[in-house]
Length: 71
Image (cartoon, rainbow, N blue to C red; front, side):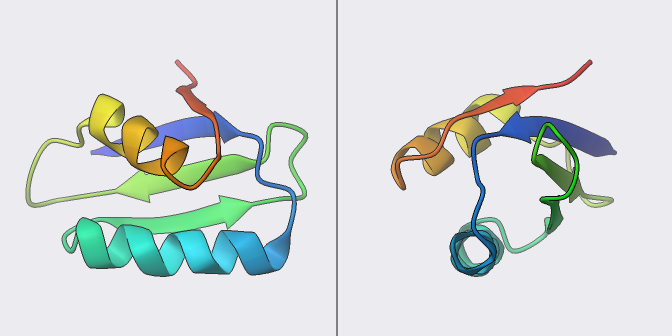
């Protein structure tokens, strides 16, 4: 399963910090940012369980970031 999120993350250092924290909190997720995309895309892939978008969005909000699922 893959979920794609539009974010407000603009900085590479912030993106790297968030990826580190995402991988700690959601150990079965594989995540990456595409900051060159106009939507500052966060892609999350998981083959072991269903991705919970609301949990990940709430997690990012704790770091002052916004995200929304792109359908």
